Every structure is written in C-alpha cells, then in structure tokens.
Amino acid sequence: MTLALETFFKFFIVPTVSVIIPTWNEAESLAETLSCFSGNEIIDLWVVDAQSDDDTIAIAEAGGASVI
Image (cartoon, rainbow, N blue to C red):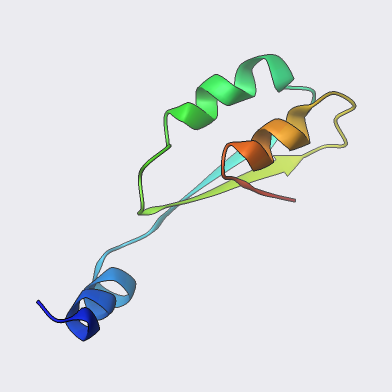
C-alpha cells in the first residue's frame, strides 16, 4: 500500500474515539486509568481537570492525554 493510501485510511476511514476523563486530585489513580488506553492510536484522550492541587496534571500529560 502506498503512503498516500495509508494516510487516507488513517485520517478518513478509521474512526476516532474521544475519551474524556474529568479529574480533581486524582494523582493516585490516574496513571492506572490512562494505562488502559496506551498504545491505541484511535483514541483521542482528554483530561479535564478541576484545579487539582496534586500531580494530576503532570501525570495526565505524561500519560499522553491532552489537558484542559
């Protein structure tokens, strides 16, 4: 398969699933939750944080999530 076709299938045919995880001080459990989604290219992973004062944001970013 040519690179052009691979790009077409990746961006236009394969569905993307968005996973949105609301958080507030979830540093203890967030890494385990995010690990469930690691390596899956069809998942768009978001963490919506409610001003945590622990390491939640850093853990989310390290786990590959986009953080709001």
